[in-house]
Length: 108
Length: 120
Image (tube, rainbow over all chains, first blue to last red; front, side, top):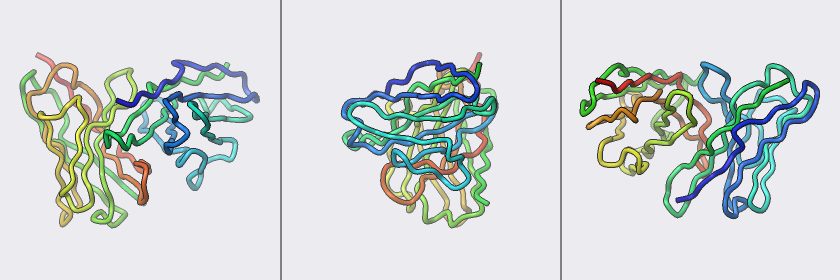
């Protein structure tokens, strides 16, 4: 089955840029979606189809997908960005949805 | 506004059964594919099951295949998850999730979840 690998944690200082990766075999051919989950809340879609932002999502958030790695980038990080971030794809061979293990973003 | 409200969670003994429900509002439910996703305490997200808009195509994750049935009632704007032979490791918050139109399993709306605890 298809596997997505995320770093368990990423730390960044306020005002800097946070980069969260999501690794998968030839992930570039898949559509990657990203979710933000603040403590005690449901996940929120923040990036879909690799790089598109839903209405209302800050333009400080961006996504890309190339080779074996998809990347979520949060620029000018704020304390309110502290959350868990999850990547997700649909695996056409198994017809299953796959999530990465999630990355906890800490703002120092 | 899109609303998904889950119910039916609770404490159940190992080997027991539970039926989760999700009441949808704010959109044309019959037009959308739906999913259940769960999250064990302190863990990541895990997809559980999918159902197409008409209720005829069903897909299950390996973690619960054979022990769970997803269904829907489009006349009542409701999604269900019947769970059987529950195990301690099924303890999780279960989310009802809408899949946006288009390919690629874009999960654009989530409920707040209902907590299922399997314990003796």
